[in-house]
Length: 309
Ligand SMILES: Nc1ncnc2c1ncn2[C@@H]1O[C@H](COP(=O)(O)OP(=O)(O)OP(=O)(O)O)[C@@H](O)[C@H]1O
Image 1 (tube, rainbow, N blue to C red):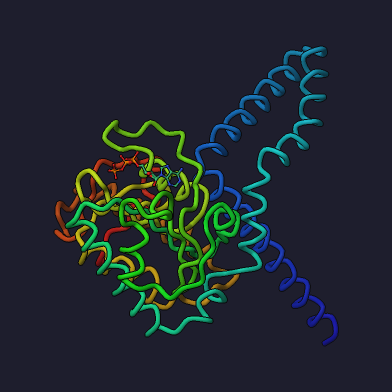
Image 2 (cartoon, rainbow, N blue to C red):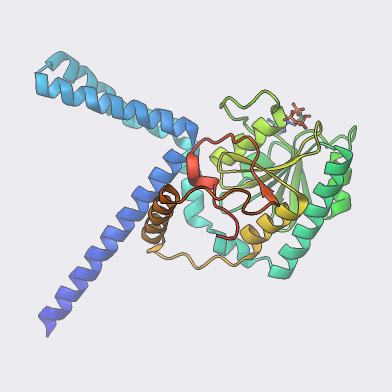
């Protein structure tokens, strides 16, 4: 009897071990895939490893020796280069969406979204430029530090006032944490990607922050009045009702509780989604209200989830 309990506990430990390692690899690959900087560094590491294999196979000792030195120091270099990503990953571990959402009720989120969409619709009509970022599970504290701190309920009037041309806080971004405006006039690192020339600094900043965090950023163009959303490095244009729907889906629809099995389930789901996409012709204009603009598509399908699917 004791023997069988031991066997069961060994199997449980083994499964746990595999799941945790799987989760770590999955998160690592997600970070690499969602960030243009990490993709380049990752490609560089792969090239160096390939050269090392060739050096070993061909017996090129000096080259092998040099690569060994490079790889040893490379660990330190990677830690320094990836410092922001490692930091955001650790922050994510300690602060999941579920925990973050616990402080805010569904009703409060609905009210906040109504106010936000109302402000965006009004600013869109008047062609008032705006940049508004909603924090998700990854902390935006570093960026809040760059702005003028606030701690105010989101209201349509307040947002419109902040972005009114000529006011001291209209330059830069508003950051929303939960249902509160945490700051205005924040600065984001712009994307290094080549965006179409019609997109200027505001859109570059929005795509930039969406590449390095899981935040949702709304941009109202001063030139066209168009409302766009930057998420995971993708830019999509919405009408106000589409924006409302997107925010409701992202913020109000309760997230299922995070479990250790999530990475496995997510991978399986995205695998089956990819297969479906390949075998089905693209559905055009599935939802008129949610219309994609020129995609700044950086990482293919990550942000391309269709509504209603
Ligand atoms: N890195 C940044 N972080 C935060 N806000 C920024 C950043 N860069 C620019 N902005 C904001 O964008 C404004 C300039 O926008 P610009 O006209 O260059 O952008 P755009 O993408 O062409 O948008 P629009 O369509 O509104 O003209 C600045 O006044 C400032 O408020």
